Length: 418
Image (cartoon, rainbow, N blue to C red; front, side, top):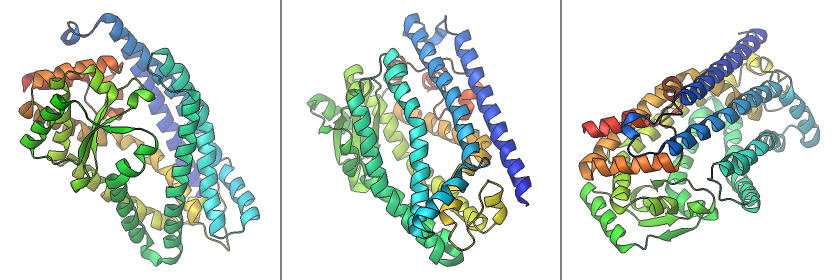
């Protein structure tokens, strides 16, 4: 392919993807606004109109912010690529660091920092204006910036060595570098899945053992029934940052932990907590977690193999606004360009992943209904939808593209049938 044709193809996909995303967002807003003044019949006895309207307004506000971000991100993407932003960065950094590994790491770091700086005002607005307006923000500006610094330091401590090893493999491991890089990436992902909860999560949240003896006994009974062994039951201080609630498990093998947000425990009854946890354990017992990891590994292998070919194609660089170095390594640039281009060309495949995820959610709901009580799960879901201001009336097409969980009405109807 010649560079100019690839430039035109990339620009066309950027604009087409942006148009589809804006169209979906506008549909979502119109659909929610149209149903704002009436609670869906199956929820009318449980959710007040005021709560339904709050959820509608909250979702519309988030979607409008998303529209602004979509436009900004598209402009930034074009600025980095076709308008020469990456080329300027490359020239500037190569003049300062030469064309060795220091230049490559600096290029990756610079793109990451610039992207973070662009996102920062929107993150701050979302937290302290949007979330504050709807009563969800519990974070202070000091905690916000403290988290920002921590995330940056942890990201640098983990990310830079990983990028360095990857770039070294790209340069020195021959034509099969992408296979070795894939093995490295898989090992890193498995390590993080196993140890994130004990090594990194405590830097941001406090985890304490679940003290409620009655609830602990109930949960341990559920785990025994389904054959799930856990390292421990913990409560996370989610209320320090947000009023939203959740529960999850993490880790592999003997390192598995079950974690409850304190906001979840304060809102749900013990039987409802058991039902929610039964759903989460369903994902584990039905091998959904292993399946998702397997799919992720297979896709990453294919994408790295594609990158292994693209990094040797001059049109890939020139078509995205970059003049490849003639006497130095272009591996970092190839990695950055690939990460920019991949979401553009794969967005329309999003519904395929959503279909699989929704199927898993239905299966986990059915598992929970067998091992706890479907009415308890329905009651818990209704409370969580209300407390988190999750809309009960999403646009079906928008939901098909973006939502990993089925709409509330469909999910509750399935549980009632079960």
